[in-house]
Image 1: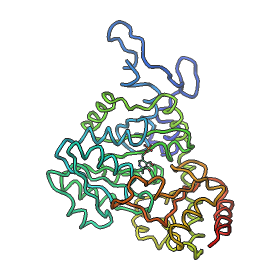
Image 2: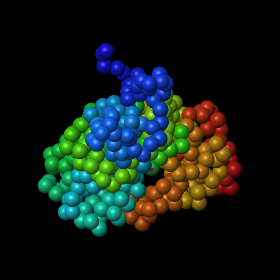
Image 3: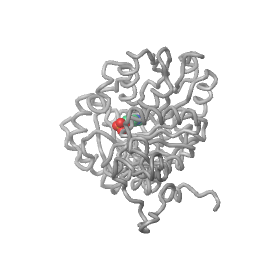
Image 4: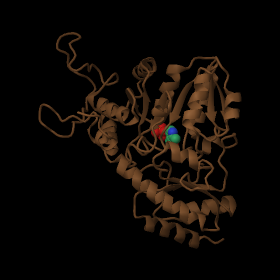
Length: 385
Ligand code: PLP
């Protein structure tokens, strides 16, 4: 059969029907261990669920296919995936370069867990190639960690350019593709070595499961991370893996609708004086718009606003919407609103990654776009300015 397209692979990659019953949906292998046909006689290579489980394999094959990678490994959360990756490729004395508005949890992991074990992290403005060049220390920097679009200010980084800079310095280029998902952006094809996901977000897509994934082409990186996964044990459980495979089947449709709704919300927001800045890469006024248009096939479902009325107005707005429910996380079918300075990014308060206190972040869902804008309008009307 010829190479299948993304939408076909989203539904079929790794999703073979059950040969014993014909069940079209592969079963959830809710088991911790596998009977052996004599010592070492494994059926399909499965021995114990920490080293492998067929439901997890189904998810890993599906994600690898969608990211265009040779291997994927799935984990209990995005941070568990990041942790296993970093333990697999770093050693004491190594150096990491991270964007200065990366997800706060990534910064926390690097500085508060890996820092005391002798790994140094430098944060830098990823949109300025010279600053990135200056931050890289050839021979010492092992990882250049890129997040684009970034969380929560939706900064766009030129993945191909940054991958080149990383490789010139002998570092591995890692891209956190959580905000775009492989439906909108494929970092490995642009030269990245590793893709990281919080599958909790768009891949799962329904706010009902935590998960993470690593995707690579390089066999040695795969082996190093798989060993950490096996030895450390932060694997995704069978039900979680199954829910994620189910979510992924509708990924492309959802991302299209998330992008349409987010674009409409962002355009509307530019007409409202209450917002002094609207962060959305689909707007031509966004500084990263041209790069985003080149490396993404849609601009995604995340929009942030800076409120002209400052922190007080931002907090009041975040507490005044109804359809946009106040909650952490993103990427589900339902719309969410968050106040990053005290919610998702509370752990980076007082650091160079601190989020301005007048910023609110929207995860725009796939409800009716008109209803979503009406909800935001009503919230503005409710606030005593
Ligand atoms: N990367 C990004 C961009 C995120 O937004 C998050 C979580 O919000 C993570 C990684 C961590 O993922 P998890 O919460 O699944 O551990």
